[in-house]
Length: 402
Image 1 (cartoon, rainbow, N blue to C red):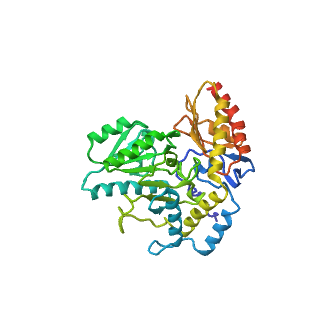
Image 2: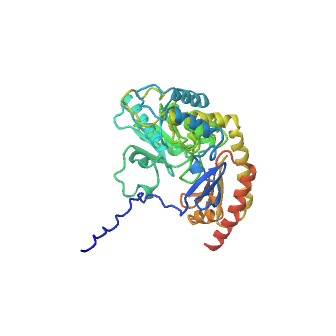
Image 3: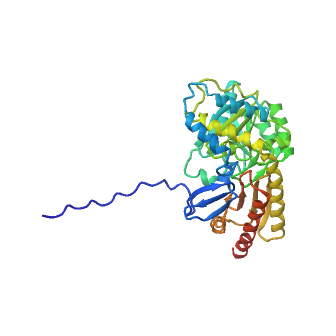
């Protein structure tokens, strides 16, 4: 009698191929250091892409989250969530704004901001409201935020894009004034205070002040995307505070929960009542665990002086990088603010991701040729010097070979 045939093995399910990943799997972290599953240690100058505000396994955050998990992780927004009120009050206190909506990601926060702008326009009798956006912008990958974004590579294959966006150059007030004169349906300006994915390009203090004045004169909403540059990364709670202005709408995410997914849209008086019951919502946004992460993150940041640390260590890191690459052919510019720094090269440099990892350093490359450094805000002066000590020879060698 023949033995039964063994059926062929079924293919294992796998994660969709949406990320160009390095062959590294991280196992655990502590402070500004992480270890992979093979035991190799890395200095984390990426911070989960500006997410791990308090680094890894912070000794005050971990027990707070453990306590919250044992108490209540999630409940529906059908009911009051006291931690939402606590986090909203703190964000409003820090920003001078009036109210907050909570979601889970920066994309969702930006999507909500776009809905606020459109509803604001419709409430004023404008049937086809338009929103000013910028060259080099990145606001997310949903269809609306993708349309507001300025990267043709990530837009390719997803048309038709959402209409209603008018694009202008960075820091060019004359271009914006021409839009104001020619397009009566504009209702808002949507700007990253410091462009992150676009290559670490700050809006100038002068431009932000002029923009605030123009929006006031035109009755437009000023919407400042602080998803990446907010939550203390530049040395102030929000990057626009260096210009002494306040936005009408401010999306936040990334560093707000120190790794727990938290997004928020914080609104000033002109925008706080635009949305009402039924206009917007979320299942997971504002859940007790996420809100506890936000509350504890802000508290620990304040208690440990992390804004001052970001300003001080960021200034040292910037100065050391400029000194290390002064006169080096192929380095175009070192720019940024606080612990949000970009090193622009004159050529694509994606290969540096693996080279840096091999040398025990985690970085990212954005806009094809900008090395981005966004480490945890707890990084020490000594660790910042180690970043430069590892990166400088790697970059010089790369430039000499390519």
